[in-house]
Image (cartoon, rainbow over all chains, first blue to last red; front, side, top):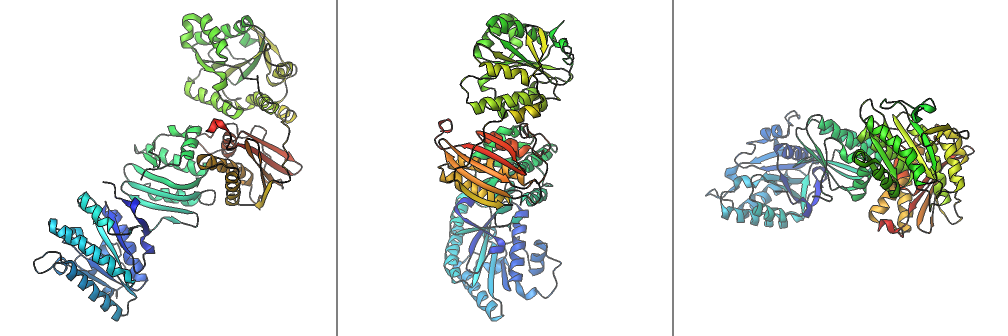
Length: 297
Length: 330
């Protein structure tokens, strides 16, 4: 299933602010790790307390969380700033998810973090991992609704993780619609005119804005950052406002290099004028290049 | 003596060498066939790729005369084999790329359309006819350009002798006494310059293409272009500007105005930064490796016409982009 990113306003993980309640839809562990890393680093930097709601396969403690985020090398003294709630602490006495009780715990944690001098509390967790049956599902939805109301106060922020490989599509639709925003990794390139974001499902990049003589080097670097990815790549282009000939050549050269490794580069969402230009030059025959549907998600 | 030996540089059948460019002035179907049939037959016999890009009437004549051999002939209705000079050059190169056989020459009959063209268009096609001697110089192509004297003006027929090193009549080849060096010819046969009206929008001096882009976009939108058309106009102007800004430290003065059916942009680089723009720059489509003239080719391809000229120390590029009333784009 394609995650319904389109219905959300996207927020880069580094731009999360207290009051945000966003979902993180991931389809690869690498994608989740990249975003969690940004989430933890951003929290440490902003002097937020970080609370991780861990399912059965979540990190058992703060150190494991740091290792999972490839941050094990950070200096010590952070132990108090990170807290992990295990599966036993998330449910009611019978092991079921109890939305009101969980919300109470979060409220307590928020109060405690304030008294400890932190500027805000940031909460994240993969609650799909605690789901057991259909009634749990409706409880989780209830929890999300309560959370949305609770967190509008602006002293707390939450990122609710959903593994789209494990969630039932209908349930996933319901969960995601409980959030106004979806969180994604910080861009590889972010200037006033150009944003390039790493994407994971399928792997590739999303290019937004203007590619001209001022940004060729940045685009080349962004392409290099996914050059070692195995298999086919997708470049999502529907928000490209301007792409000059030399910028287009970078994409063609990249596709040709991938072709030498028997992989393709698909350009999706190409604005019609760029499709026209690619065809005019004859670059639509570039080995390794696939021209996907215009305006694909 | 066979025609392809008559003027020395023409190669023997089947052997790859550089570009050979002959004109053929003909005044009847018989005259056309007297040139075309032996040329095509010899090419097909030598297993060379042979193209006839000419009028539908001539294609018909040729096919009938060739009989069974017509199956091996590539044909193109000439009006659609590149609508403008820049597209024509691309069409020749594309044919070469797709049909070339290693070590073998190829033959082309390439009859331009002259009837109904404006003076500017005629001058541009004549400049291209001359430019082919430079642009295709390295290709193993023997090209014959027929001119139908029943249709073309005496001036156009006369100019054929200035743009082709030799003229073919039947199988008899005569060097053209008036053949002119392409660079000199291109300077001499210039379309009249267009003057910006006093009401033209003005911007610059700009040293970043981002400023050019905003101006190009704003003027195209003001003229009524939208969507894909607006984006292509913006790209054409930016690629022309990139060409002039390629020289470090260059700055551009910008003007734009509307004419019936078109938006015109004039980019002026007042200082002689960088090398002068060669007369046939931007006629070859981008290849596998980046080329200094790639952007100019795209700008030419996206414009109705693009004119590069020098005025004292300044270099000017003027390009005309089809306006919102151009029904070909509807």
